[in-house]
Length: 172
Image (tube, rainbow, N blue to C red; front, side):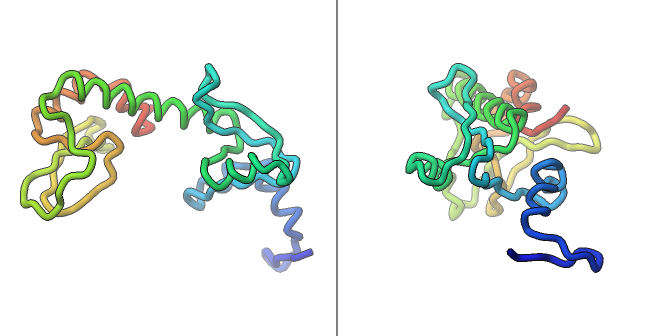
Protein backbone atom coordinates (compact mmCIF):
# COMPACT_ATOMS: atom_id res chain seq x y z
CA UNK A 1 0.00 0.00 0.00
CA UNK A 2 1.30 3.44 -0.94
CA UNK A 3 2.12 5.89 1.84
CA UNK A 4 2.71 9.63 1.83
CA UNK A 5 4.79 11.75 4.15
CA UNK A 6 2.86 14.70 5.60
CA UNK A 7 4.71 16.87 8.13
CA UNK A 8 7.20 14.00 8.61
CA UNK A 9 4.41 11.53 9.41
CA UNK A 10 3.77 8.47 7.23
CA UNK A 11 0.10 8.35 6.17
CA UNK A 12 -1.43 5.55 4.10
CA UNK A 13 -3.53 6.19 1.00
CA UNK A 14 -6.45 4.54 2.82
CA UNK A 15 -6.12 7.00 5.74
CA UNK A 16 -6.04 9.96 3.36
CA UNK A 17 -9.15 8.70 1.53
CA UNK A 18 -10.93 8.32 4.88
CA UNK A 19 -10.03 11.86 5.93
CA UNK A 20 -11.23 13.31 2.60
CA UNK A 21 -14.45 11.25 2.72
CA UNK A 22 -15.21 12.50 6.22
CA UNK A 23 -14.19 16.10 5.38
CA UNK A 24 -15.23 16.80 1.76
CA UNK A 25 -14.75 20.56 2.25
CA UNK A 26 -10.98 19.97 2.22
CA UNK A 27 -11.10 19.48 -1.55
CA UNK A 28 -13.06 22.67 -2.17
CA UNK A 29 -10.00 24.68 -1.18
CA UNK A 30 -7.85 22.78 -3.69
CA UNK A 31 -10.15 23.66 -6.58
CA UNK A 32 -12.54 21.62 -8.61
CA UNK A 33 -11.43 18.05 -8.03
CA UNK A 34 -13.80 15.50 -9.55
CA UNK A 35 -15.16 12.96 -7.09
CA UNK A 36 -14.59 9.29 -7.95
CA UNK A 37 -16.20 6.87 -5.51
CA UNK A 38 -14.43 3.85 -4.07
CA UNK A 39 -15.92 0.36 -4.20
CA UNK A 40 -19.06 0.29 -2.05
CA UNK A 41 -19.04 4.06 -1.52
CA UNK A 42 -22.28 5.99 -1.91
CA UNK A 43 -22.43 8.47 -4.77
CA UNK A 44 -25.07 10.83 -6.08
CA UNK A 45 -25.73 11.66 -9.73
CA UNK A 46 -28.13 13.68 -11.81
CA UNK A 47 -31.03 11.64 -13.16
CA UNK A 48 -33.64 13.51 -15.21
CA UNK A 49 -36.04 10.58 -14.94
CA UNK A 50 -36.28 11.07 -11.17
CA UNK A 51 -38.73 13.69 -9.87
CA UNK A 52 -36.01 15.29 -7.74
CA UNK A 53 -33.62 15.25 -10.69
CA UNK A 54 -31.05 13.04 -8.95
CA UNK A 55 -30.53 9.63 -7.41
CA UNK A 56 -28.15 7.83 -5.05
CA UNK A 57 -26.29 4.54 -5.57
CA UNK A 58 -23.52 2.43 -4.02
CA UNK A 59 -20.56 2.16 -6.38
CA UNK A 60 -19.74 -1.30 -7.69
CA UNK A 61 -17.12 -1.39 -10.44
CA UNK A 62 -18.37 -4.77 -11.67
CA UNK A 63 -21.66 -3.21 -12.76
CA UNK A 64 -21.10 -2.05 -16.35
CA UNK A 65 -23.64 0.76 -15.95
CA UNK A 66 -21.59 2.23 -13.09
CA UNK A 67 -18.46 2.30 -15.26
CA UNK A 68 -20.43 4.11 -17.97
CA UNK A 69 -21.81 6.58 -15.43
CA UNK A 70 -18.29 7.47 -14.25
CA UNK A 71 -17.08 7.95 -17.84
CA UNK A 72 -20.01 10.11 -18.96
CA UNK A 73 -21.49 11.85 -15.94
CA UNK A 74 -20.19 13.88 -13.06
CA UNK A 75 -20.97 12.19 -9.76
CA UNK A 76 -21.24 13.87 -6.39
CA UNK A 77 -20.15 13.02 -2.87
CA UNK A 78 -23.25 14.38 -1.11
CA UNK A 79 -26.93 14.95 -1.74
CA UNK A 80 -26.36 18.67 -1.11
CA UNK A 81 -23.82 18.86 -3.97
CA UNK A 82 -26.06 17.10 -6.49
CA UNK A 83 -29.09 19.19 -5.44
CA UNK A 84 -27.06 22.33 -6.11
CA UNK A 85 -25.97 21.04 -9.54
CA UNK A 86 -29.58 20.19 -10.47
CA UNK A 87 -30.75 23.63 -9.26
CA UNK A 88 -28.14 25.33 -11.46
CA UNK A 89 -29.13 23.24 -14.51
CA UNK A 90 -32.80 24.08 -14.01
CA UNK A 91 -32.04 27.80 -13.50
CA UNK A 92 -29.98 27.89 -16.71
CA UNK A 93 -32.86 26.24 -18.56
CA UNK A 94 -35.40 28.74 -17.17
CA UNK A 95 -33.20 31.71 -18.16
CA UNK A 96 -32.55 30.32 -21.65
CA UNK A 97 -36.30 29.74 -22.12
CA UNK A 98 -37.02 33.31 -20.98
CA UNK A 99 -34.44 34.59 -23.48
CA UNK A 100 -35.94 32.49 -26.28
CA UNK A 101 -39.43 33.81 -25.53
CA UNK A 102 -38.57 37.46 -24.85
CA UNK A 103 -35.47 38.59 -26.71
CA UNK A 104 -35.60 38.91 -30.46
CA UNK A 105 -32.69 37.01 -31.95
CA UNK A 106 -32.03 35.30 -28.61
CA UNK A 107 -28.40 34.74 -27.76
CA UNK A 108 -25.40 33.29 -29.55
CA UNK A 109 -24.46 29.91 -28.16
CA UNK A 110 -21.28 30.02 -30.22
CA UNK A 111 -20.57 33.49 -31.58
CA UNK A 112 -18.21 33.92 -34.49
CA UNK A 113 -15.12 35.21 -32.68
CA UNK A 114 -13.49 36.13 -35.99
CA UNK A 115 -16.14 38.85 -36.41
CA UNK A 116 -15.26 42.17 -34.81
CA UNK A 117 -18.61 42.80 -33.12
CA UNK A 118 -19.61 42.99 -29.47
CA UNK A 119 -20.69 39.87 -27.60
CA UNK A 120 -22.50 40.86 -24.39
CA UNK A 121 -22.61 38.66 -21.31
CA UNK A 122 -23.86 38.81 -17.75
CA UNK A 123 -21.39 38.94 -14.89
CA UNK A 124 -21.66 39.56 -11.15
CA UNK A 125 -19.75 42.45 -9.60
CA UNK A 126 -18.85 41.37 -6.05
CA UNK A 127 -17.74 44.86 -5.07
CA UNK A 128 -21.01 46.57 -6.03
CA UNK A 129 -23.02 43.36 -5.39
CA UNK A 130 -25.00 43.49 -8.61
CA UNK A 131 -25.35 41.82 -11.98
CA UNK A 132 -24.10 43.82 -14.91
CA UNK A 133 -23.47 43.52 -18.62
CA UNK A 134 -20.00 43.51 -20.09
CA UNK A 135 -18.82 42.77 -23.61
CA UNK A 136 -15.92 41.51 -25.63
CA UNK A 137 -15.12 41.54 -29.28
CA UNK A 138 -12.34 38.98 -29.39
CA UNK A 139 -11.99 37.59 -25.85
CA UNK A 140 -14.10 34.64 -24.79
CA UNK A 141 -15.34 34.13 -21.25
CA UNK A 142 -17.45 31.36 -19.75
CA UNK A 143 -21.13 32.18 -20.20
CA UNK A 144 -23.54 29.37 -19.31
CA UNK A 145 -26.49 31.19 -20.85
CA UNK A 146 -24.77 32.40 -24.01
CA UNK A 147 -23.81 35.81 -25.37
CA UNK A 148 -26.36 38.54 -26.00
CA UNK A 149 -26.45 40.43 -29.27
CA UNK A 150 -27.23 43.70 -27.43
CA UNK A 151 -26.69 45.12 -23.96
CA UNK A 152 -30.44 45.89 -23.79
CA UNK A 153 -31.18 42.16 -24.09
CA UNK A 154 -28.75 41.37 -21.29
CA UNK A 155 -30.18 44.06 -19.01
CA UNK A 156 -33.74 42.84 -19.67
CA UNK A 157 -32.63 39.34 -18.73
CA UNK A 158 -31.06 40.58 -15.49
CA UNK A 159 -34.29 42.36 -14.55
CA UNK A 160 -36.51 39.38 -15.34
CA UNK A 161 -34.29 36.52 -14.18
CA UNK A 162 -32.28 37.83 -11.23
CA UNK A 163 -33.34 35.03 -8.86
CA UNK A 164 -32.23 32.37 -11.33
CA UNK A 165 -29.01 34.25 -12.09
CA UNK A 166 -28.22 34.19 -8.36
CA UNK A 167 -28.59 30.39 -8.42
CA UNK A 168 -26.39 30.08 -11.51
CA UNK A 169 -23.64 32.32 -10.11
CA UNK A 170 -23.88 30.87 -6.59
CA UNK A 171 -24.79 34.22 -5.03
CA UNK A 172 -26.40 33.92 -1.61
